[in-house]
Length: 448
Image 1 (cartoon, rainbow, N blue to C red):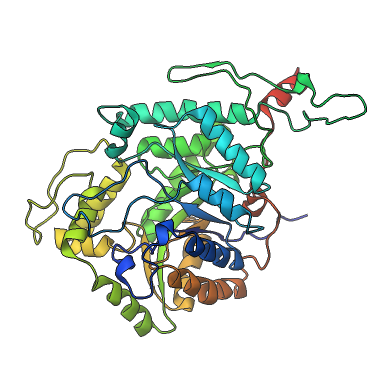
Image 2: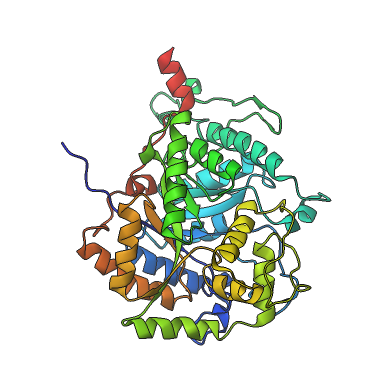
């Protein structure tokens, strides 16, 4: 029996008013979208109506304010993701929830419990976007005088993920017998202490909630540095990535997929989903006009502050705005995004002003401005030529940008047989085509 045809996976990257840096100023955008539950419920229901695999919420651990644009940019905070998704899981049935949480600043036991709870509440629709936290602002909120160095953050992250997975395996799937006749509530042979002692963490266990519905919530990762790529090959099941061109996306896809064998993994066990910023119009002229309307709302100081943060949190205001991006030292923050900014500037010979205008929408992700047919053509090219397994859709404004994609692009993809017409299963793993992991303690006992 042949395998079912491969389908595009879609995530909806929800970001308050939209992903364009000036989105909140657009007359059709929900300006308070980051902390408006009714709005977030609406866009999640839209994504589910469009048969998306999941909605994704990025998150940070500080009330960030980009230097030089204080008070003129959208509020950078919002709801804590697991809390928000727990509420949204009660009003949806199929769509998954990818919540961001940091291995640098969070506690593994509490994190494991939160995500296990979300998976149980949603009946198997939880995913953890693993971040090491790129920005330094969080350090002071956790009693630290400075942000841990990049390599140390990844060392801790590797250990952290193993601990969390071990805690999710604390209880075997059939541990809870609930036998009223005999009086056995659970089988004590099927509950396990982790007793982890490592370089960064010490955790006893067991977890005080049952094993998640999916075994483990889906592991998502977004780093593209050398450490990030290897980390994804070792641990991630979905990777979000910023690749502005087809050639860049192909190179990244082949590189990361090529690393899997070293960790005993197969290519289909990792879904690579580049971010895409689609501006959809019924004609090319309409799409271009929509995009230009957003560009016209950019305040220069906000554009410059955005670029400064993406270039490594260095202040660019002291450099000529119509001059080249200066040589800057390697950041201790988001190394891959800094490298991407330099790559775009050099390849396209952009000034600082040109660069902030160029990245104001997609922030270095793939940007498409066009009709449903032309957008579907480009998505299909990436999907069929080892550049993507799916896409993390970044609507330019919310809710209208997601409405446009669901109403106009999704039907075109379905007509081509590239996207589902109904959900395949109940859990996020089933819909993504990912295996349910074995319980490590049960597997060890069976092997013995």
